[in-house]
Length: 189
Image (cartoon, rainbow, N blue to C red; front, side, top):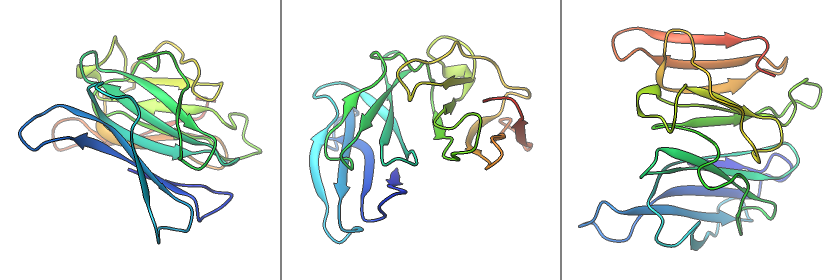
């Protein structure tokens, strides 16, 4: 996954599932960054050594911070990491596993300064492989804490989400069949 600094397009960070060998399923949260729009890349390592992680998702806010959502494979709980230096180093923002989550989680940040939810983070995941319950949660403090999860109408899976400039949140996903759902929240913020 990849994220670009909205204040400086030269700063880009990426995250991936780091397999140390092709003979093992064990994976960690790898990351890399560039400060020259992708001409040269640095790959410092992983978020935490020897912690089994998967499903990396990255995003940025409108002030130059990067965020890395990572799923702990043993619990299906996620946590948020933040970088304030263009992806060069990361600090655990939420408690270990404190972002709730579930399999195939996605998140987004409200980047509209005039939005009532400016800076809020929204997360959506596949409900049947969840950390605890629900399919959706939000953070109003930059990923440090997450509200209790709730279910989403029509139970969409394997989708994505985004915030419009008016603060409306959109979630798209399928129903494990032939239907695709686009769910809109006018009050997620």
